[in-house]
Image 1: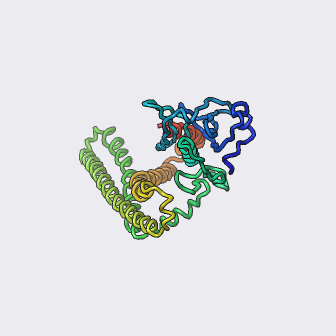
Image 2: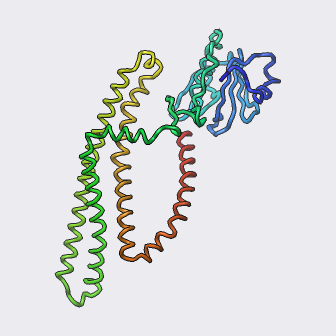
Length: 343
């Protein structure tokens, strides 16, 4: 894509303000200086910076009015800041989608300020997937939408082969814990129907047995949960260690030119942060999720076995509930992503 040739709709916006100057570089943006989402573009000539949003020119900055410029690459956004004396001026902002293009923009501005002629690779390819058009993940050439997720899970499953016995033990604890949680209501039923309601029969022995059974079930459930947590932690830490070793070996085999194009911090994040995030997912989210799903299936089967009419009363509204939750989930997710980017 040519980034020194303005599209016609952008050229019409700047035509009366260029005064014969030629645009050296331009890039799109999706954030204004107030960190609100707004489509626009930034254009640079040999002396000025043009900032426009919604095809309307918002600001013009003279490059030589500033002492220096700074490119801020934050966690979820980027910004070019002009410095004049002790004051800082936010020239423009962008989300992570345009962060690489903003780095070229910053280089062009600083070279112009230094009296040099900026040399920019105007055929720089946009960081977007050629198949679906979505932006790549940060500092990668990977499209999460088109990624073969099934193949990744299959590869992860094979990498976790040394931990298979531990995961088998974890699944066994799921069975035990679910069985205990299903037996506990049955003991409560006996306690209420046969002991408390008919207490005049003075069936003290049955009452004591129910109390002992409830205590044993509670203690067993706690011990099984502790065992599951210990085994899950060991399995996830072992898998995390193996992934770190695999990533380190992969980085060691990269060429020097590949390492030059990557920051040391990014490589360290790949080894530490990403593997730790996977470890927390397996240790907390995945284990609890599997346990809850397994328990839900067991409860549904037991409920249909005991009273199918009551089970149908519970099941019939579920599609409506799932529909409402699904629609709200997308709205909540979008809102969460907006707040995350702004922060």
